[in-house]
Length: 73
Image (tube, rainbow, N blue to C red; front, side, top):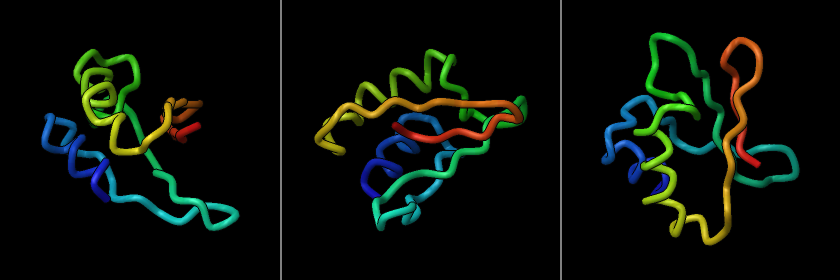
């Protein structure tokens, strides 16, 4: 939850709260697209990830596939 709050505080207002993924691990379900600020290529998104990365305690990379659906790795 802290990572999501951090991202939103840096202008990525569409960043969702975490969900429990497979194996009980937390993750984020991201739906990017033209009407959202969830765009891994957007400099503001990249700056937010860089600024908030410390909260996760490990490197996290967001991958967006066809249709704007994204996941963290």
